Length: 266
Image 1 (tube, one colour):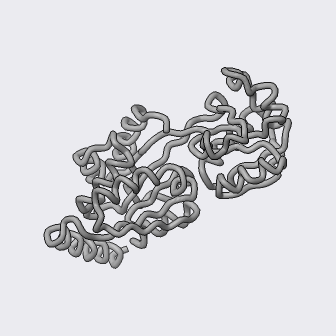
Image 2: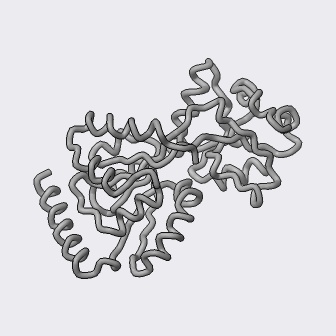
Image 3: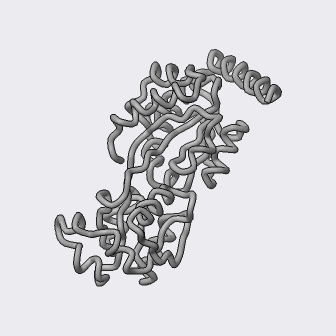
């Protein structure tokens, strides 16, 4: 632990020196899941690259546990995750946005026939979904725990016939007719996925919150702060610094909870 603190301070010294020597040049390493990398981050990264063309970006994908480990050990500067936040205790985790889920089925599927009309999806129940084979995320990825909790709370045990970490894989098997897909709503694209019927499940599942985290005590270069504020516009530089300086976990969580209550859906 003592060595880790020394290494963090050594990194900080290098970052501070580089900030004064070459403000607009450096590297930024992100560790995240496939869903965030594929659907939530592209627009942010595109705008960031235009603003900071001399900053090299490195994207690492993995499970929440792997993501947390990379950020804690310094392999990644930032961790972006939704699930298993208990693994991120050593990081300052800032709330970015809420999101929920959608059910994806083929046009001839019974759920599409019954709930596919305007406003009809709100009438769909968890029991309606559980009556069919389900394809969804592997446990520990992309809000899977809240999905399982919702079914369990109603005494339902869906027949999960296939799981994957990648929403595109889930959609592939929905197209093959293997079952009902449950994915993050951001993973459905009206143009690319027009052959599938999307049924909103916002009323069935509790919203999940995606966070971005970094090591406590880490010096944030200007472009790092800019990336956070692009990904989470409700977070100002002053707010990021304020939360980062709170060393007591419970006090920091109370401040984060205040921010979470004001977040918008993705």
